[in-house]
Image 1 (cartoon, rainbow, N blue to C red):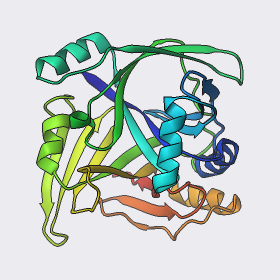
Image 2 (image 1 turned 90 degrees about the vertical axis):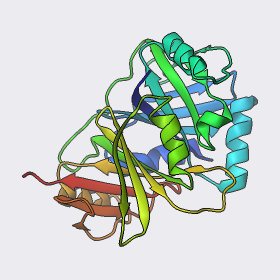
Image 3 (image 1 turned 180 degrees about the horizontal axis):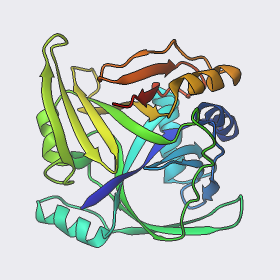
Amino acid sequence: MTSKLDHLIIAVSDLDKAEKNYKKVFGVDSVWRGEHKNLGTANVIFNFKNTYFELLASNGVGIGADFVDQTLEESGEGLIGSVFGSKDIEATAASIKNKGFLLGDISNGDGINLKNNEVRKWKNLFLPPELTRGIFTFIIEHTEGTLPMSNYLDSGTINKLDHVVINTNDADGLIDIYRDVFNIRLALDKVIEHWKTRILFFRLNKTTIEVIEQEHDDHNPDKLWGLAWEVESIEDAHQRLSNEGVEVSEIKKGIKERTMVATIKSHTHNVPTLIIQHLAE
């Protein structure tokens, strides 16, 4: 089944501007710039230890361009999708079908890195609405080529995704999909009494999908909300961001024990963004 959170997708209106902004946020260079000519989109990728981060913009005519343009018109820039990875997408499709869900055919994709002309190929399995629940979600198997790692520089550079936050008004329904269909480990299911809020933690490939159950007005049950990125030294990261002209809050203790956090308040293209350091025992 799904083996990892392969990547996250962010819709942007100006790809060049977004690339420059996120280079400041992350402190690393992008590793890929390409096009999906049949979809009418262009992308930039930053690659980290446990996932990659894709900026996606309209760049022509196609269903991808239509999707990005519609998203930008309705809700502006921001998180639009999460993609799960599989080591055997045919087996994953068969498993989902055996659980009673109707799926389309597996499709093939390919891309050329305009930075160095390297080629990557992959297979995609797009999912029906009853599995995506309002979040653009598909499953991918990479079949040829690899992404280079971003040039991690120092203790103030982003090095991995700590967690992604989803808001839901139906935690039990989400468990039915993420745990029972996608086979993602449910590590925590707890009600925080003083918040009167139920929180779920799903864990895979050294990152966490944090789910917060709360009422919202969207007709879909689930909404991607924000990201938290890990750094080795939050003080160094805070100084680096400030030097780059990125607005960042004061450092404070995190909700989780032995963590320090700060909120990035600019340059994120409407993605609520936290940096976090896990303190040594």
